[in-house]
Length: 317
Image (cartoon, rainbow, N blue to C red; front, side, top):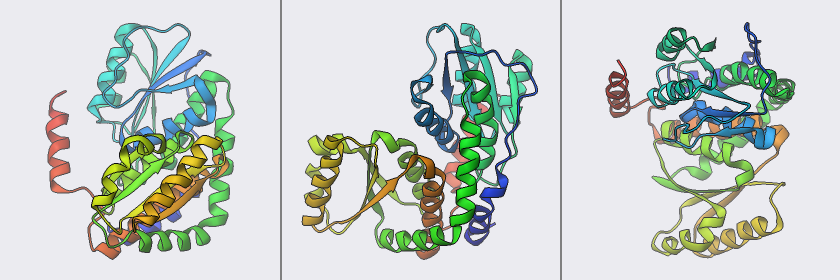
């Protein structure tokens, strides 16, 4: 599979969303604590943003510490072998949480069976980056059952919208790839209201196009992050914004955009609408695949990445 195969897979996204209804009893709760890494983290972040305060996603490396009342624990791993997620799941089970795991098999399924944890197996793609529809298919129905929300039909509508917009989004993706091209690293500043999209973009531009990113919340760059920009010139900088941003956040985006433009950097705003999150993710993902073609780099895992993953996996075996 190469970059062109990836492009074809992305175009199949709308038809890959197929919600998996839990085949076990789910007790209604007030809130959910969730753990996932990399591409498995993004749908959890999206669900947290869509559902408000009821879904709290653990930060990377964070573990559940105490048992919280009327709260379930949800662990997600596309590969099934993400050790950090599995450790969080084991810790949550030991603390006494009602636990549910979603994944593509592997160690997380094995551990779930051993510990009596409810498990939903999802289909998997060649990489977790491509598996977003499969991940949401397994996660959103569980969250709906646990919290009484209606996220699954909302995601269904997003994928329907994507199916109608693929051609236009593909053209936008090519334009963004051309904007990104020519630099070995880039700036990426984001609003709290679009954190899931920003994190996803950071992951895929690193994995697909092999580019480093300067990644910060826009409110942080105002105070400290702006200082080093006078030392570099002509870099692409993205502003991940939404129409939900308050006046102060919007003003900060405008101020930093003007300042970076005056320093000779190339600044581009990406506007995220909640009801079109999948469209934006698709377009940005696609841009990084096009960029990998322009840069003549393989969009798949590097030898170092594979070696590190294998060594980490042995820790739990």
